Structure formats: structure tokens, C-alpha cells
Amino acid sequence: KRRIGVMTSGGDAPGMNGAVRAVVRMAIYNNCEAFAIFEGYDGLVKGGDMIKEMKWQDVRGYLMEGGTLIGTARCKEFMQRDGRRTAAKNMILKGIDALVICGGDGSLTGADKFRAEWPSLLEELVESKELTAEQIEPFKHLNIVGLVGSIDNDLSMTDATIGCYSSLARICEAIDSVDTTATSHQRAFVVETMGRHCGWLTLMAGVATGSDFIFIPEKPAEEGWQENMLHCIRQHRAMGKRKTIVIVAEGAIDTNLNKITPNQIKDILSGAGLDTRVTTLGHVQRGGQPAAYDRMLSTLQGVEAVKAVLEATPETPSPVICINENKIVRRPLLEAVAQTLEVGKAIERKDFNTAMRLRDAEFAE
Ligand code: F6P
Image (cartoon, rainbow, N blue to C red):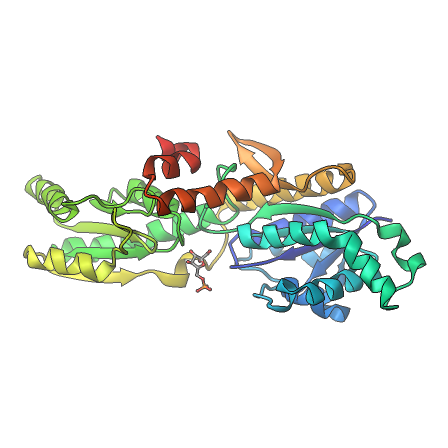
């Protein structure tokens, strides 16, 4: 029986549990055994009880739970070759040679590196007599399949990452609440949103809440942005709007790549005579129950991930499970990560049009 491991890694995202549940159940449905690796790569390096077989009923109730019930951690040991060798040994001891990882681009790149090193790690384990040649014989290749779990929606080649729509819904709810108090006092609010170097959450929240102005990393504020913003806000006020909402992505910058901060915007708005407050949404955006979309996406993608494991050959490059135009598809993991990294490089060299184009289609338009 094939043994498939599933783990969550990096920042948690709503929907990760749905992915774990789908992988476990699809594996069992296909007559395989499923193993959860607890606490991300940490669990892989520690082995033992941190790698636990999961039965059908072990993932009952997972679909509607936020965060990740099998835990996640940032693991320094796995960054070192020694740590990865220990991880390989722990996997062989459990008979696992396929891993489905739900995480961000860093976690997925780490996984593919592990796959590339796998044969030499096994050789080292035999040389050091930690394992015998017979023990490693059935496990010549490691299959890696990526699922993108992140509220940031920052991976290229997929329209949505697991978690981004739950986070967007939570941000909108929070801004709706801010709205009522802002309207009552005719105040201005500057709301800071997460997303790391990606402005998707901010852009979509701006559209979904009808905010007055937004700042995102991919479209840095151009010279004179202070006046443009005030002009825009004055126009809205002149039309009878009693409140002002400006949303700033945590990665927002100007065209000189200087960070734009909520307090900086607050000072500008206050200077223009608006009674202004700053609200930082923080980890509220990442927590709580997954939205229906993320339950659906994580389930369909978890199912596809197991199919990808079962169909993989030693030559198949590691896939990442994506969604494009409403279809669940497989894309080459390394290419998706490389394209994502290109966005950052384009921003660094101030080629903002390319940065926008390399993001999802909706950004480019
Ligand atoms: O990647 C998800 C994310 O929530 C980002 O939006 C944010 O920049 C970062 O993680 C926060 O990380 P931490 O939880 O380690 O503070």
C-alpha cells in the first residue's frame, strides 16, 4: 500500500484543514495509507509521533475549522542538509515516499529541493549506516505535490490561493464595521491590510467595500499622490459621503520604493481637516472559519493532489495544484515559484507594468 504524507507549512490559512481532510480521505479512497506530519517541517525532522497515520474519521469536522489543526512551524533544521537527511530517514522509517504540502511559495520551494536531493540523502543514510540498502530500495523517488495555502494570493499561475477569499471576507466585514462608526462621526479611517508583498487582498477589499483610496505594492504611489488622494476624497465628500476609508497594504510603497505607512496617510488626512483614525486589522484577517469558497477549493485541490501523486513518474516535475478559470489544474511548481519571484524583481527594478502583468489576470487589467 502506498503511503502518502500531508503537511501544512508557513503561515496558516483558512482552508488548510479542508486540504488535509481531502488528501487523507482521497488517499484512503484510493487504497493508500495517509499520514499527517504535525507542525510542518519540524515534524518531519523530529519524526516519531509527529508523523501519524490518519484514518477517515480522524479528519471529521476539519472542513469548517480555521487555521491548521495539524500545526505549522518555521523550521531552521530543515533549511540545513543534515535536517533534510534526518527528515528523509524518518519518512523511510514510516514508509512514506510522497508528500503533499500546503503552504506558501517558500515552503513549496523547500519541498522541491528535498525531492531533488532525495536520492543523495538516501545514499548518505546508507553510507552512515543509519539505514540499509534494503530499507531504501523501495523508496528511490520522492513525489512532492504542492497546494498553495496563503491568505496573500501571491502565487503566480493560480487565480486563488487557499485562504485568500476567507481573509477577504473577514477584511470586508471589519471595514463594514469601521464604516458605521466612521459615518456616524464623519471621520476618516486608514485601514492596514496584510498580504506581504502582494496587493490582492487590498485591491479586492477596496472594490468590495467601495473604499475611497488604496495603496498596493504593485502600483506604487506616484509623485504627487498626496494631492491626488486628497482631491479624490474631497470629490467624494462633495457628493455627500460622510466617511472616508483608505486601505493601505502592508507592503505599499511609492515609486522610489519607500514604504507608505498608515500613520503617514493619517497625518495627511488630519492636515486636510479630517478627524482620522488608524485601524490595523492584523491577524484577525488570517484567523477564523474558512469561507465556503476555501472549503470547496481546498477539497477539490486536495483530491487533485492525491491524483497527481498516483499518476507521477520519476520524470514528472513536481506539480502545484492551481485553479485557472474555474478549473483545477496542475502547473510546474518551480515555474510558478520562479514567476512569483519575478514580480518582486520587477518591482525592485521599478518595472511596475511587468509586476502587474506577472500577477493574476485580474491584476493586469
Ligand atoms: O503570508 C501570510 C501573512 O499573514 C502575511 O500577510 C503577513 O505579512 C505575514 O504572514 C505575517 O506573518 P507572521 O504571522 O509570522 O507575523
